[in-house]
Every structure is written in C-alpha cells, then in structure tokens.
Image (tube, rainbow, N blue to C red):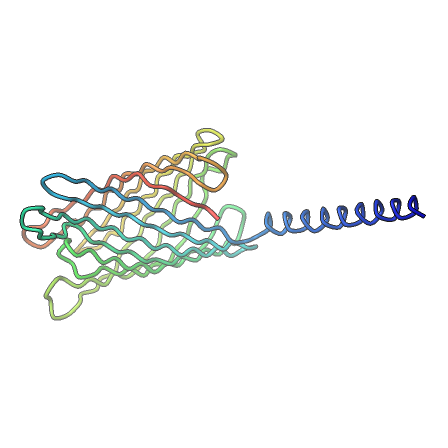
Length: 252
C-alpha cells in the first residue's frame, strides 16, 4: 500500500511539475509576443556647500507595435533649482516639459506613413509653449542586425505663443527627422535622434545623442547630450540650449 501511495505521489508530482512547466512556457511565450514595450528614465543630481543645487531629469516612453501599426507616447520633464544657504532663497533656473504622441502605419517592410503631435513648454525659452502637428512619409534606409536608420519627411503646422503675448501664432512647416540606432555590443547601444521643423518665420531643431549600457536585463545606465535650437528668440534669450545627463533607465 505504501509503495502504491509513493508511486501515486510521484506521478502526481510529475504531473504538477509538467503542468507548471507548460504554464510557465506559455507565459514566457506570451511575454515574448507582447506588443508593448516601455521604459522609465530618472536622473537626479544634488550638491551642497555655499549653495544647494538640485537637478532632476525624468522621461517615460511606451510603444505598442502589432502587425502594420506602431504607436508611441513620450513624456519628459527637466528642472533645476538653487537654494542659497545664507538667505535660504530658492531660485529656479530651468523648468521644461514635453509630451508627444506618434503613430506609424507600415505599408511595406521598410516604408511607412506617420502622424505626430508634440507639445513643448519651456519656462525660460521666451515661449509660453510650442506645439507641432505633422504627417508624412518614413523609410528605413539601413536595416542590419546591429544597425538601423529611419528617415522621415512631411508637412506640418506649428503653433507658438510668446510669453505675455495676447495670442498665439501659427505657420506651416516642413518636418525632417532621422533616428539612428547602433548596437555597439551585447550590452551597449548608441542612438541619435534628430529632427528639424523648418518654417518661414521660425526653424526649430533638436538632437539627442545617447549611449546606453545595460546593467542587467531590465536596468541600464544612459549618458545623453541634448541640443535644441530656435532660429528666432525673444530679446535676451539664447538660441541654443544644451543638456548633458546621466540617468538610470528601467525597461519593462
């Protein structure tokens, strides 16, 4: 009887293990097929002494890609402030927000149509906000296992409002963009994202150069340089802003 019980217990355990293995394999397969990819990025620097300085940089990206459609949502915030220890007065020196959404429709392996919305608010740029709507054609001109390059072109509309201006202004633009990715090694990736929104009154360009190194499967360190330029700015404002950041990136 005891032998039968042991045999039955062994058979039951084997069945449970097999069932658990099948469930885990199915879950893994579902995870691999998931159309969602997302990442959260955070950087923070604080100094102390005669003055206390703090800088924060946060970004979030989510992409849904299935069959012919690819959708992306991007959000970021950047801020810097200084507190004088003698007067205990805090001064904000930088404050910027961005929110954008983009959809691509792939009508062949390397060709697609795109549409995008973008909203920028930079407290110290002289503009209360800059908003862009654009659509056009994109093509993957380099497609290798370790390297890709996408180029885009299309017409659009830009709406801007200067600080203290009663109304906003709008103009037609031509959008040119490029997205380059190079897998330098199994753990490091170099990227370059560049766009130019060219208009008769104002041309805006932005370049984001980054090197990302994986710490593990979900965590990475990222070093980036962002350069944004406005061809026309209000009096007393600089045309070009740069931002160098070291951040942690969590992918899920």
